[in-house]
Length: 493
Ligand SMILES: Cc1cc2nc3c(=O)[nH]c(=O)nc-3n(C[C@H](O)[C@H](O)[C@H](O)COP(=O)(O)OP(=O)(O)OC[C@H]3O[C@@H](n4cnc5c(N)ncnc54)[C@H](O)[C@@H]3O)c2cc1C
Image (cartoon, rainbow, N blue to C red; front, side, top):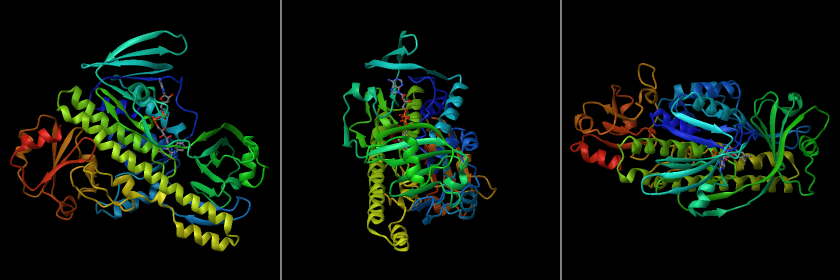
């Protein structure tokens, strides 16, 4: 859905098919990180998404407990959206995101994306239609679709195909692309339920996650919707009510179970992200343990990278290398995030060991505090990923305009955000007196110029001219440009 929205934003038509009759009932993801929110902002979706998310005044705290009937051991405190916005405004040094993260479940986010594409005349979006097969050739891809309810089939011809068809992707399978890494890493059990017993389920106050050695209770709306993610009960009793009671420490509260099922975690990465005119994006290309919340967020990055490149190809702006760069840019990010999610899981395992061995709650709390919560603090993973092969710090985000890096975000003197001034396609930022004309005159693609007349901001951007791609990554920078055509040839592959 994000890819469809991205293509439409560039004026490119597409067809999306989803075999399910509706969007997901499985809560799955519960954090949309700040980088995804920046990208959603460019797609005009941020206000609609925030409207279905947890209230902006509520914190993002992660609290470790014994049980909800006993005590809270240690709380990692994270600001609300309102507080984070104030922090972003106050620290205008390029280290901050344009958008704070958002607490929301996948059950809530998907209808917003669906409505956005259903409203778009450029997207032909069909639910209840399965993608069955395809034959790629030199000029396009022929696809076979089947209406699930009637069994009717249809053949469609397209220029390109993107397999955004999840972990069991048939697009990936039919291409013969393998998965590397670890499958079925751990057996998990999920109970998604509704209950208004907030006094019990948030006994120690609002927190996004309450965690114990047995699992994590996710507050999906700080009101009545919750998800318990557990280790698979060893004794095999998967009655959701019993599982829930055991975790909470009492059973005397009303609840309605919405979904409950076992599932396996994976740490997998596709060997390739594309073959000819066919591409993989999202979980078809990578699957992670949810520690860190990188699954969907990495997929959003894939969709935006692939989206503008496909649009450039369809519009005739792209050279041969541009679509090939999709996998070259995104696969290392996919791998890095896979390794990060594994590291974060290792920390959780160490904390589980502490629970087993440490009887003194004070000492346990100190041990948890010392191990930390990098899974929700790895700003370098979320914002620092770059497409130039340089491995940035995974915890600290260090702003840079090195080509391939995400453009640092600042507010300008007039109070507007630089990110909100960027054009749909490319943007040339000019700081000081550099001559932009070689780049502007040679541009084979739409480019807008933004003149930043603010000496306090200029040093953050490290050069007098910074050329920004549609996905807000830096394409090129320099204090002068002698050969604009050469820059564009490289930037557009
Ligand atoms: C417990 C849990 C917690 C998570 N927490 C987070 C989090 O906090 N943050 C985060 O970013 N990520 C999180 N994730 C990961 C996130 O849910 C996934 O990464 C994300 O859903 C992947 O999106 P996708 O569109 O690539 O694939 P999917 O969501 O799997 O969507 C693929 C779609 O393709 C459809 N499809 C498949 N085959 C066909 C076919 N042949 N024809 C038609 N349609 C087809 C499927 O029905 C499905 O709707 C979590 C996951 C889990 C399980």
